[in-house]
Length: 293
Image (cartoon, rainbow, N blue to C red; front, side, top):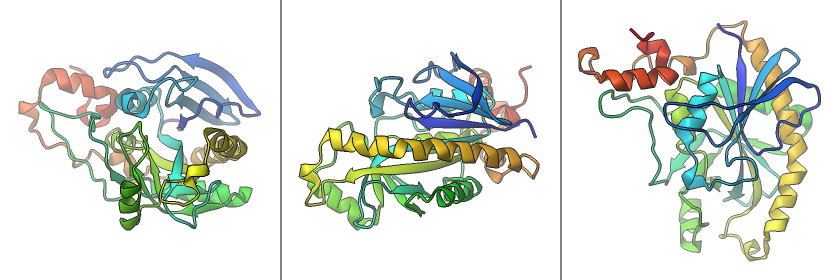
């Protein structure tokens, strides 16, 4: 197995880690265009890290305009083996108050205007998403949060909406009836694409407020949400550090099943595949498509 690299998708302050060395920003061009920003790379001990601000530095890009395919492809092209996704969310359950970290394990996708796949006409693939996040990575995240004493919940359903507007009260109540745990705008199609790229993916949602179902929601301000994020920032950075060491240790063991997600996913017969699309897809699926002729 090649040297592991942990990709982190989230806010622009996550890479402010004590002990991070060999740092620098890299511009990555992918077959799907430019990612949200340059990628900040470095080493922490023996671990390689790559940080990608999902919305660009300064939060310039709204959720519906993030180039999710380019973001995932950029990390894959840099050699990422694992991806930790960090995002701010609203809570849909009374037992998930602001400040809670939720280690997501399921999704309900309500987005409608985003490219959901790297594959398409000329090369069709159907990856399994019954279990859309990496259980191994989730175990490491939970262990790190326990060690830090961070209030968290292992397991929960992330309801992803298109945005950029928040939900109506009727929608929020509907989502609660579906037993969703948190609501956000960014984890889909990110999780789908990570599976297609054969990356181990785990999402940690940081609850900043209750969604509008809650009677106190109307009193929530942007300043209050930002304060919750700032309070959680150090915990998020410490989580990254702990996870980096864990995946480095994992490199000595067998490869995770996530890294073979395409073994039985390609359905288009080799003779019927579009050569141009095949060449494009080698950036994320080179393991199964082989080198260029």
